[in-house]
Image 1 (tube, chains in turn blue, green):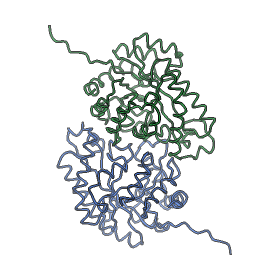
Image 2 (tube, chains in turn cyan, brown):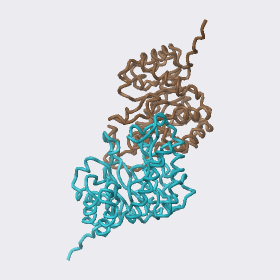
Image 3 (tube, chains in turn cyan, red):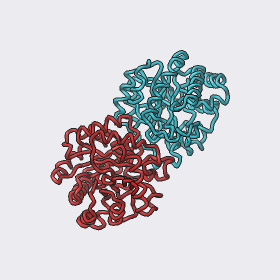
Image 4 (tube, helix red, strand yellow):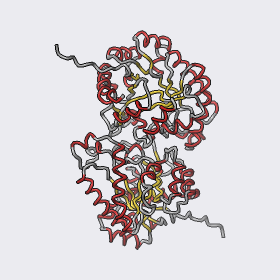
Length: 299
Length: 299
């Protein structure tokens, strides 16, 4: 009898549904289960198209966990009416997360009012000229405060996702883990956490220190892996790659996350049109290989 | 007799030659002088094509200052031979700055070895896989140390330019003012400074604090203005705009720079193919208008 190589343990690996964007929730779940993954991280559109109760059953029937729900946020509006609408939608997202049985609701907080037209978001003429980044960041902090009691009541954590400065103007005025941790010190770590997404934070000179702090403060909601590839795609939102295809040092960052005490799921969330064109099974196979090589040995 | 409106004082405004990339140094100097600017900031290629002594004379004859020389840097190489070549080229750039009569040599420090092939830079096969960002940043600090005695001897300051995280992989592993100030604490402020380029640093949550610190430590070498426009151009290097055409809050950042005690030139450095297609006089007129509206009143 020869030694059979041990298959890598994919129990902590999670498929974020954006990685297989053209596929339904049921198709994503089937691909994740077939490959031996432990979890999925669905986006709200894929949940809503079948209904959240059915979505929860599809995932539970496959024996998978829900690592997070993507996404709430876009809470930087200046006018009260738009802000109230955004808060209502975030409360709905909190409900959906609770029904799905995940504690983590990923929050992409939104950009500058001056970018709302570009983003096809509701806005007033005055918004079109508002480039006050300091004030927009303060509104994020205030509105997280507005949402915390509701989230706590439902047992859901608001997982703030600092975004690459590529997206500061239009999608996310939070840019670093340290900044995100600074604005949530008043809230319990059960109510507000942070997402460590390699794509968004890999360049940060304070990354090691901030990951350690996030761990110490009990706030690491999610570890997401995705690579920084060059040249950037024409649509920079979709310019991400499988771990290993770009410039990010996954072993090092993974060690920092592990040393910070994170024991949760590792989600693969990649926006890339070439990857979306692949069969889901092939995408999941590639991400499992890269996880096994670049992440799992360092956990 | 009616009141004649006072023309805005453009004495601190400087034309970086990259903004008028297709034009020779003499053409840039003529356009700057005709518009009443006080200075130019030439790139080395435009200096070298006429020779540095002639370049210095062209600028002095027009009665303009040299606000900075662009650029030295690219000092992240791992192997000794490539590193020594880079240091030799930086010493030449220091000589050129001294001859031109500017104290400020802008330093774009370089990216990860793994990106050298993409950047057509000399590299070994081992470089192709090196994504160690922490080590690359340490090499920058070490090589700045190597250059400091030569720069001090020539009366030239190494002006470190933190770059937008868009460029961390391929062009500049220094990403924030705070990080840049941290690595140069051992060197005199006459020997090593930092560049505040709005395009590169506008998103930084610590920007106000870091600008104040740079001023307190006497290290602001240059204030460069250029806007963050969206969507990004296909070549992301050239995706910059005139102040006012994008999302950056120039009045606020300018106030921070003024409060930090900066009294030097304000350089306009824009990489944009549409702007390069304009007559130099039109480019300079537009930048003077934007400077007068968005920057000058806040100095």
